Length: 222
Ligand SMILES: Cc1cc2nc3c(=O)[nH]c(=O)nc-3n(C[C@H](O)[C@H](O)[C@H](O)COP(=O)(O)O)c2cc1C
Image (tube, rainbow, N blue to C red):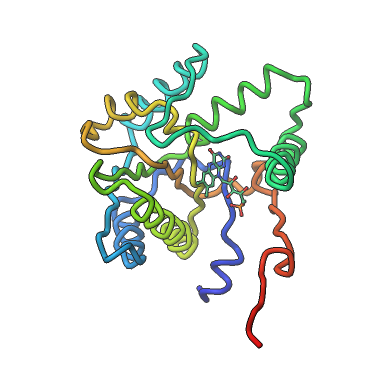
């Protein structure tokens, strides 16, 4: 697929077919994605690729934490409370997804179910956890994980796959470590749900908005 077309057609996928992604395909995606740039070519990323019973175990364990109301305590700080345009954009995503999913604002039960689905990697058949060594976990290295994450998401499009880069499943890093064997010496940064999209899933119809370039770009070129 043409690069621009892949970039434009990628979007977060929140409903998946149960078919597992072949290991060979996941390998190819990761091999392609590790061409991503990284600060001084440190390639600080570590991937833990999950599927089968291990992923099922993790989904259940994370869901238990969510149901028990355990406070999130990710390795990389909590999301601060946003205001202004950032809050507006955040609210817009939530509102649109809930509308598509038929979740009313006051329907606590359905909202909780959605939160739990998020913890379960949106029930994707596979997931990738990206972690990095404690010694290479400062800004430049975490920034580099952003580059590789987007490259994974784009490479996935090429194989007819959907992804959702997700922060929520790394809210409970000790659970992720316990089940995946990721050592204490690594910080758990982000999760990526991956699988074949279920295009009938209502949330997958969502197309998020973008601010017009004029509002985010400043030209000083004369
Ligand atoms: C660092 C990061 C964390 C994210 N975490 C979540 C998440 O926990 N749950 C979720 O539904 N989407 C998550 N997303 C997806 C964003 O909501 C999504 O990228 C954004 O709304 C733009 O939509 P698009 O990806 O469809 O273009 C995350 C994206 C990024 C880059």
